[in-house]
Length: 231
Length: 241
Image (tube, rainbow over all chains, first blue to last red; front, side):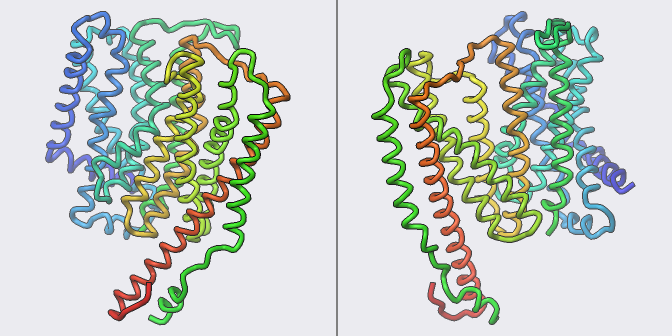
């Protein structure tokens, strides 16, 4: 219930201003376009790297949204109020996490169709598996983003410190998400797994990496958050 | 006021074993290097290039031990909330990043004549590079956090999550590379090289412990200095630093 209240509060604040969402989504579109210019106009080549481009765009634009989530609390001293309310403090983390998740997923909902047009990706055929990979990858990204921004947003150099802390941690997630997305987009889902001696969907093994990542860091961040937020 | 005064009365003394141990560690390292370099015959394939083994492999081991120390000290800090664990985590991270950096540089120096390139996306090399970035972030956080208690709690959290990530990073990078079909180098080693390597592993461990002890002692001095400055600010009087 407490979680729901925080999600509702954050999303309402966002919905009423829309300033953050609009600018972050626009920036994401811009980055996607810039990658196109940087990589050249060869459609086939662009399609092959679309997975990597898509995820880097998500990371670079999404990272801008996390600090804001705590900044609006800090500006009016309302974080202290939140901490004073009875109940488990982890619900603050879960609430912020869900609000950030909704924010980034909505941004992706804008981004994906645009990427499909710019990079000539047939998303409708693969929308199911793609949605799973996007959700799992975004969950891990947002979990660590919400966690690290709880610290970074309260420091002087927050703009640079958050990516400095966050991006090295996200490397396994980036690899797994890009590989899985790339495999799904190119339609090359099946390979022979030599160890198991069976034919398995390669993308599903990368999905397993994402699941492990999400579980480890959801648990770790939930445990550590109490120590981070207390004052 | 009196409690602050008694706390900051004297700067913590350097542990008596520190200096002799440092001398011993350096001498041991010199001896171990000498033995290793003199006893080992040139390798059949690598020739004298093989001798980088005696600094590279021990450095790489220290790059694994340091994050483990940071992790254990961080868990202990969050559990017991004693400043000594925070100082230990910080000391191990500072020394660790030096060894991680050394490992990367030595790896590059070895890779250039062996594989003809300075950098390769080898799983171990890549994992070491990612470790470097994670602990650079850890130290950056410590540098930017001013409040002592906050810095200790936050960096402990970052130290724990960073260590949890090490196996995930390694597995995902290795998997990513195997799919791209990269050569693997078998780690077979002759007995001739083994003694030198073992001696140097201990030598590096002693150096590591010595350096961590120094950083730990410096952290202690800094703490007591802060306490003195705080006292001066509170009393407004002159205090000897």
